[in-house]
Length: 369
Image 1 (tube, rainbow, N blue to C red):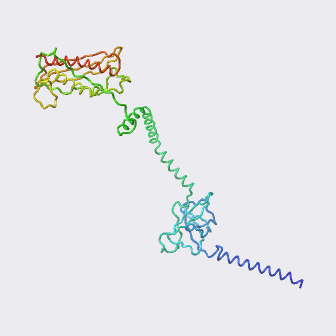
Image 2 (image 1 turned 135 degrees about the vertical axis):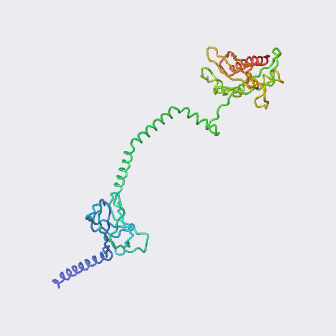
Image 3 (image 1 turned 90 degrees about the vertical axis):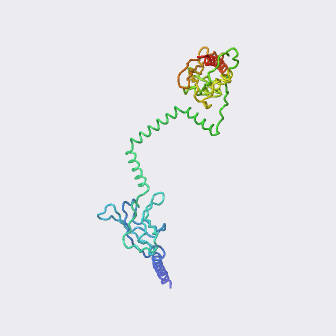
């Protein structure tokens, strides 16, 4: 009995090993993933970088098999034929889409199969052709995109150079005109009710001439029409004007009560009315026709800067009858010294100069022909 015991043990061990091997083979064929397979031919129109025999095959993201062979297609140097073996029940149809994916940080390539939209499509019989560019890696795609961008830049180098030059010129223009742009933006803010409100202007006025008792004697022509004086654009303003054109800071917030031509017309009409209300000139919009006209051109209304600044007013005046015939013409100019260059002193000097000029104009208009 002692001699036979080891042989029984050894025999049992060998028998167990044989059973285990057969069990493992059975497991591999039925449970472990090496069951019955279907083989399909895939054709890639382009390179398949990094794809190797044994690489996985995914169907809708699930591993169903592996690559069994790789070969080139004779007579078609761009094509690559890939043979894959997948599980028997994998629904590979004629409309199944074929591609190549790169997984993980290292970019390991795998073949991807994606089910088609038609569930009734027939089973795949011939080779399945991958979409064009399916084997292109992200690196290759980026390289091709950069190559196309480089080609576009090379073809349009001159235009791009001109565009950059124009942008540089525009930026320089903006830099030179930044103060003006700030002023425009501030004006828009004030116009729309935003931003800091502009400081309130101090308004100055002229006074009509009165007290003609010592001048009375002649009567005014009847009827007589006086329109708003004509003037160059510079004089059509409410600002205090200077010669040379250097406005002192004290006058920034000062202005006349109306534009200079309208202000001169209004105060001259009032002065004529104070002289003779019954025969005073009428405005151009009074409706009177076939009347003589008193034509006035405002030539100067400014502060002449110098050692002794002066307020200067100059007018040219013509009387034209109803037939357009010139009856009389005269130049009038008055100036007054400004004691101190401030808006109030300048306004007072202009008021004195206007009073003297208005008296001479009325006396000239009233004298007999």
